[in-house]
Amino acid sequence: MPMSPLARNLTRVLALVSASPLLLSAQGMHVGFDDRLLAGHNRARLAMGMAPMQWDNRLARDAQVWANKLASTGQFYHSPDVPGKPLEGENLWAGTTGAFTPEDMVGLWLKEKRFFRHGSFPNNSTTGNILDVAHYTQVIWHDTRKVGCALAHGDGEDVLVCRYSTYGNVVGDNPLKPNPALQRLDFAPSLQVAAGNDDDLGSISFTPAVIEPFRIALPETQLKLDESDYTPLFATQPVQVGKVTISPFDLPQID
Image (tube, rainbow, N blue to C red; front, side, top):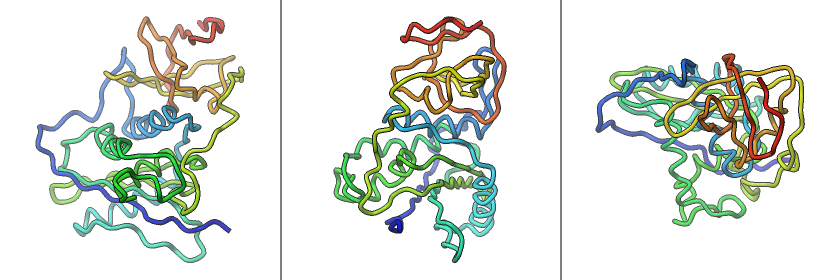
């Protein structure tokens, strides 16, 4: 029987800069809010050698209900566990309305990496306080494979709720565990990924012969689109693009 999570996680921030647009383009490809939240999560997971998460609409619907409640009441606390319902992980974020991009929202959780250390939970913070890394550990948790997030607008404040399954932050477990599936690349019938670099993000889909989604998650793997290098991540909504080259594995070019 799994042990209960030690804690779920909250973050509230105030914008000190002007608002940034929530959508951007990458070579004509527009990526939605959900895609960008998912890509932010999976970028962090790939960097630690963990398999990417998939977007889960049920988790997103549950997250929307709780985000709406927090935004409408001005309160900020975790949802209670429901008897008989499987436990879910949860990260919360709140900030000035319209002032933050999806990357900013997830990025605040990912900044906790600077305090992260390997080991069994909750002994994962160099500060001695697990709350300093608990958002991050949930994002990278080894057997969390699904995420769904939702944004709600309150009185001058946006509230983001992300739900996770299987939940992370389990006392006595290690956030990171080796995944043998990430040690090689195999071809499969189809793949949906999001491609991104430091400047922009885009989603791509290509067929018929590409790499299994869970096996493209190697930090050193890159997709090359129109002479620009991208790190592969999952996307919820693919957009067709043309020539794709995968490196540095000397695999065939896909046109």
